[in-house]
Length: 206
Image (cartoon, rainbow, N blue to C red; front, side, top):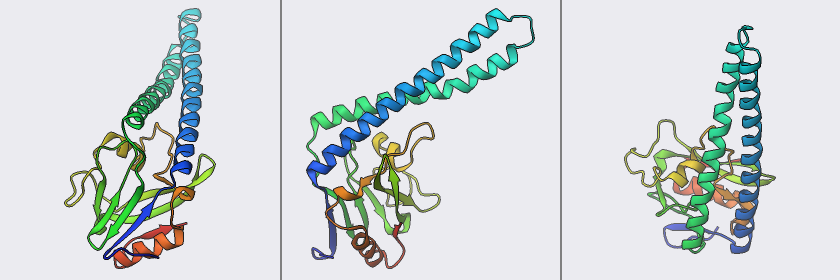
C-alpha cells in the first residue's frame, strides 16, 4: 500500500474502464428493449382480453396485468434516459484518472456522470461489497444506515448519476461503482487502506 502523505489514492486503468463502459451500455440497452417488449406484449394482451371478453368477468385480471406491466415500461424509459445522459457526459468529459481518495477525514469517490466527486465522512461509510455484476467483479458502495444526501459532511450523493449507481432504483439493474480489474490497486490493499483511515470502521466485503 502506497500512501501520499495522509492520503491513499486508487487510480483507474483507462482502457479497461472504457471497455467496461461499452459492456454496461450494451447490456443495459439490450435489457431495456427486452423489458419493453415484455411490457408491451403484456399490455396489448390485456387490452385484447378487455375488448374480446368484455362482460365475461375477466376485466379485473386484465387490469391487473396492465398494472403489472407498467413498471417494466417505466424501467425501460428510465434506463434509456440514464444511458442518454451518460453518453452526453462521456462526450463532454475526459475519463477521470482517479477512482477514489482516502484521508483521515473520509472517502472521496469519482462517479462517472457526476459533475463533482462524492465526499463521505467515515461515519457515513460501511465500506464496499465486491460482487459479480454483468459478468465481472465490481465494487458497490455500502453506506451506513440512514445516510443520505443531507447527512452532515456528505456531498454529492444527490446527483442523478450517483443515485443510479450508489442507491440503484429497484427498476434499474445494478452495475457497480467501480470495476475491480480497472483499479490500479488490488482489493485487499483497498480493504487495508479503508480500515487504516477509518480506524477499522470501514472495509471491503468479498
